Length: 116
Length: 111
Image 1 (cartoon, chains in turn red, yellow):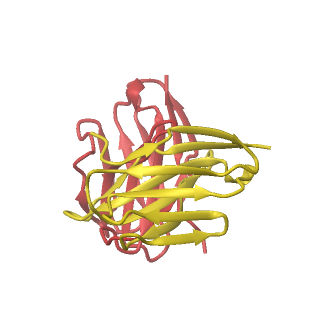
Image 2 (spheres, chains in turn green, blue):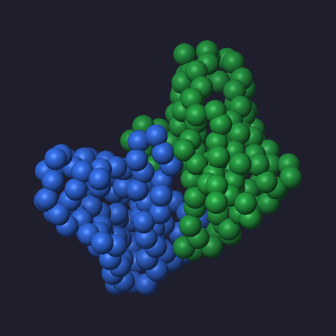
């Protein structure tokens, strides 16, 4: 069974440019997460979807970040315009039922973004 | 405010040694998970502990959940280079079932 797929794996852009990341979760997983991870740190939740509904986006900087999961399957995270401080790894994860204690999250390999 | 404190932040030891890393909080958790992350990859779940005082073993790794469900430890016996990675704890808050993450312990095992 395929795991969580993310693309691209690496992206280098100049500041003020837009960028988009794509994630395809494990088939059958209702919950999808986008995380930001700085080097040597733990993941920080940006947004959580239950099917196509964003149920937790309190940490998403909505002035420049947006996300969508239109059909409740794959998802796109966008930054426009990118800033130097956005350089990080963006992780996507999925699980059967988010918010249930003990629910296992399956992660993709991440997209490493470098903003110059 | 970091709700989950992991210590040490960094640990480098020789192959064959034993080690323990910790995950502490003042909050009570309904469950706690340990993940390992290797460079260029996403975290992978190692274990979930649910009951206060629970001990789980995974080969050379022993996980313990504190009696009060506020802390946890991971002990590795006879560490091997393949154990190298970032060890992350993540816990579900009792109050809202939100999953929070620690900052991780970066572990390097030298051959």
